[in-house]
Structures are given as structure tokens and as C-alpha cells.
Length: 221
Image (cartoon, rainbow, N blue to C red):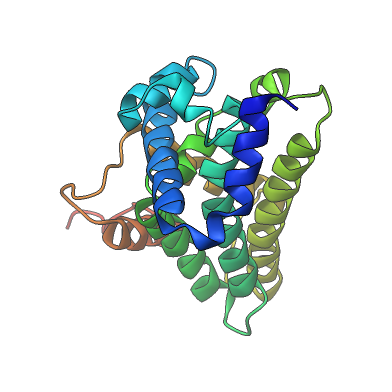
């Protein structure tokens, strides 16, 4: 291990007793989230993160070892919390339409609550991330695939429930509907910003209405 790596490991071990160290780590993660969101993972350099955080690159290495490690830290907590919420909703006893409304609202509000961390993840191509991982088939890519599968399966199970009960009607299978719904929500990374014309809860409710009830109005009299 390099001297800077040894110092970083020692500092991390003492982090529980050092609020200042943890505050600095949080500030670096916040800066990295902004840069990853603005530039994308591939185009971001640790120098960019250091500049955003108001420090030099050498000082940044005291807190983080690589761009990949920083990316994982930026997205992990937000993504994990989002999956837990989705699985909790899917496993509840509520009717399918109610669950789907809750899922859409939960995802949209999580984009706002964790902004921009979840968007940092959804705007990236998993295959491109794989090329930048430490190994071609890394543990990190397995985590990403697991997150994706768990979220899709939660949404798919709710849609399957609705199709079986007759609450939902479609000529499409549950898997296609689930992926289309998630794709629609994920695309909000292009246009949604907190403190805009509508907040995330309002947008989520409107999207749920649009999906469940359609856009067709009453025919003109």
C-alpha cells in the first residue's frame, strides 16, 4: 500500500471519532455528485471533483482512492434506500393501482430527496461503467445488476398483480410495462430540477394519473 493509501486507511479507521473528517468526506461526495451529474462518469476526472470541492487533487487522495470508489459512494445509499422502498410497497397488501401510484411517487420524490445522486446512476450506461471498473466482471457490476433486477422485479410484481386482478389492462406483458414505466421515470434526469415549477410529489402524482388513466379527454359535444 502506498504512503497516501496508508494515511487514507488510518484516517478512515479513525473516522468515527472525527466529525471533521466525516464532514469533509460528505462535502467531497456532494461535490462529486454535482460533477458526475453535470459531466457524466467517463468525462469526470478526480481533478474536477477536487476543484468542485475547493481542494487540490493531492488532498483529495487523502479521502478517496479512485474515481470508481467515489462514484460508488455517491450512488450507493440513495439507490439502496430506493430499492428498499420499492420492495416494501410491492410486498404490501394494497391494491395494485394504489401500489403503482405509490411506486411512481416514491421514485420521483427520491430523485428530489437524493438529488443528484440517483440521477448520477440512471444517466449512465451500465456497459460503459463496466469498462471503467477495476475488473471486467467486478463485484461492483454485480451490485449494479442486482439493484436493477430487484427494482424491475418489484415494479413487475405490482403490474402482474394488477393484470391478474383486472385493475390494470394492457396487451403488453408485465415485464415490458415495468421497463417502460421505469424508463419514463428515469428520463426525468434530463429535465427535472428541485425547486422548479412543480415539486417531485406533484409530478409523481401527475405521472401516476397519466399512466393509470391515460390522456384521453371527453369527446367534444
